[in-house]
Image 1 (spheres, one colour):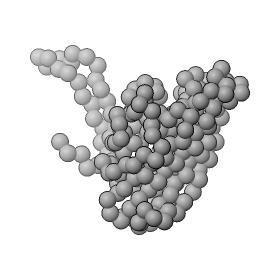
Image 2 (cartoon, helix red, strand yellow):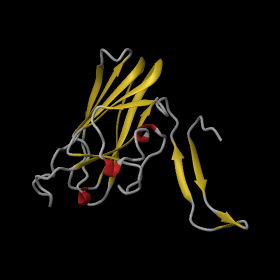
Image 3 (cartoon, helix red, strand yellow):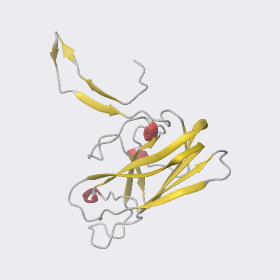
Image 4 (cartoon, helix red, strand yellow):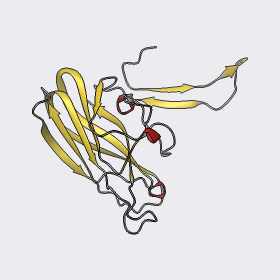
Length: 188
């Protein structure tokens, strides 16, 4: 089956018409960047690859567990990627989700910068979106950072998330490198 719009998939293993185990469920987000080329300006950690180079544009979002295999982790460094949409096309929004779970040394980015280009030579920063969520949370949080703008002809999209760098002074890992966990970059 070929997917060309947002959808919900629920699958399971059946034997003699009865479910053998629990079902797997996923929402697929279909957008302009699905399956396009991604260049990693900052590499992700091999410990948390999210499934590899296509993880940020596969249409799947991670859940509140950083161990679900859907998150790409960056230890102590920023996340910076360049998406090539393959041709100039109108774009009106860019969004990306991040996970925070301070018990596992994972913090939201300090800010996210979205930049656009038609030719990959001159980029225009459309906005820097700052984090408004406190680092002192006692449960995992999934937070979207996004920017909406008038339809703009774009081929290349650069997304840079600024890692907090080190765990804050009140944290048990104070001064140690902290994680930044990123997931789906959604382009409409």
